[in-house]
Length: 401
Ligand SMILES: NC(=O)c1ccc[n+]([C@@H]2O[C@H](COP(=O)([O-])OP(=O)(O)OC[C@H]3O[C@@H](n4cnc5c(N)ncnc54)[C@H](O)[C@@H]3O)[C@@H](O)[C@H]2O)c1
Ligand SMILES: O=P(O)(O)OC[C@H](O)CO
Figure 1: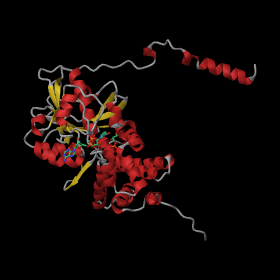
Figure 2: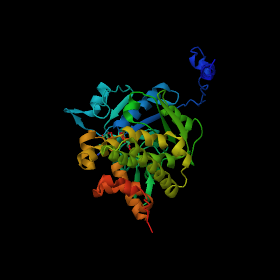
Figure 3: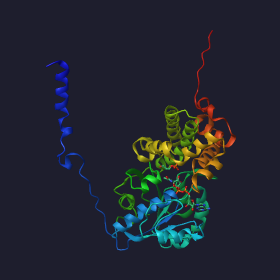
Figure 4: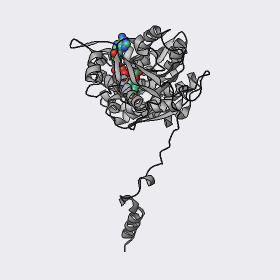
């Protein structure tokens, strides 16, 4: 036997288990763990505020689970819909009869216990859990309407990706909801392109929530187990953690990085350039978290779906990258491309890069965030995209003496 034949035989022996097809399943995967959870006398009523591409998708996820766990949740889920007319019919009527959101999530069958409601105050009436899911530019007006009209004991989860920048400086949207409505609010974010989740293609997400000081105890209040039951599906795997800041920062800022990736993609520069933008972007995301939200944990950015996984998926196929690519290919403005490409949906990076720029400018920190600054200047000041490498790199030149 030659040395090569010996090596091949050894390799095939070592790998022989790979050819076995009859191994018991328990040898291939971890035993599933079981969460024990207290059944409730008054199951929680859940309301989803928003009905866009992600709003409708997460409402579908939630309604499937409220149907599954009658010990925990009332089956009916109200989804507040910003009313609009589609071919002369109310969008809410179409959703409630066809069980499909024909404008924002076409061709996806919605559960019948998901009810579209055009009245915000009626939808939130008596709700114990509020799931916020709207483009964040509309949040201030919505919380104004909710003030004094929600249950005092309600808890909330924000699925929004963005910041509130105002007189309180830069704020997480979950903190803004807590401040405005005096209810505890966590965050859900992950590598979750809505069309894929809606088709029930497997993905992961991260839910972050802290028990409030007035936590009423297990079986009486929302906790990590309740949130897992509300959001986890066989195709949508949920990890529940405490780091609300890390989850929210990563979710908001990856949209700015995705615009940068869209620019280089539209210029035809390929995958290497996109990877370079993501590398610099991840660094600026982590630095932003450590500088302005020191309670956020660095490990969230690389361990959780809300971190680098969301950055990768958004920069591969999200709406922000598509809008920026069209800007590069056509020379049109961000607003024009968003309007013409997205049929009423939003690319949140366009607003977020402005908010971040204003905040960094206030803090005199623009120099430390060259990518975020460059993206803003390209979108709002028309700087040439082809200068992006120079804008984000500290080049060292040779000086011959
Ligand atoms: N789409 C995704 O893949 C995805 C995934 C994860 C997270 N998110 C985040 O979820 C949030 C919501 O995104 P989306 O995809 O559900 O929304 P979207 O981008 O589809 O926006 C459309 C929604 O905005 C609503 N709207 C329009 N004008 C309004 C007004 N004046 N007042 C209130 N609502 C109005 C529309 O009715 C519709 O429900 C964003 O922060 C987004 O970043 C989106
Ligand atoms: O389509 P985008 O760019 O808004 O990104 C969608 C999600 O945030 C991806 O997780």
